[in-house]
Length: 50
Image (tube, rainbow, N blue to C red; front, side, top):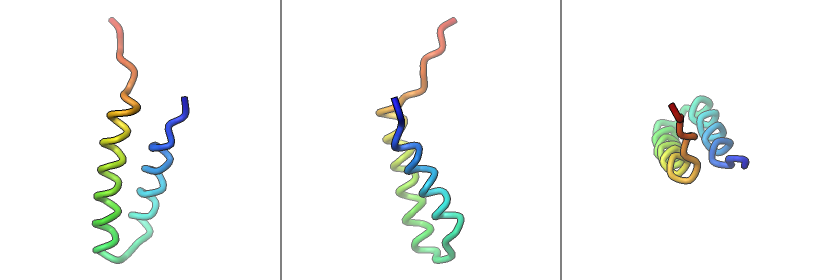
């Protein structure tokens, strides 16, 4: 199963690195945090079995 949220997070990270406007950078950072939260909810890491 592909994870579109991972691609969105990578895109947001690239935008954060390339922007110089502090307000836009903060807004993108908040969006990135939301993307990571959604990713952990809908695409949890596989459980390790021991």
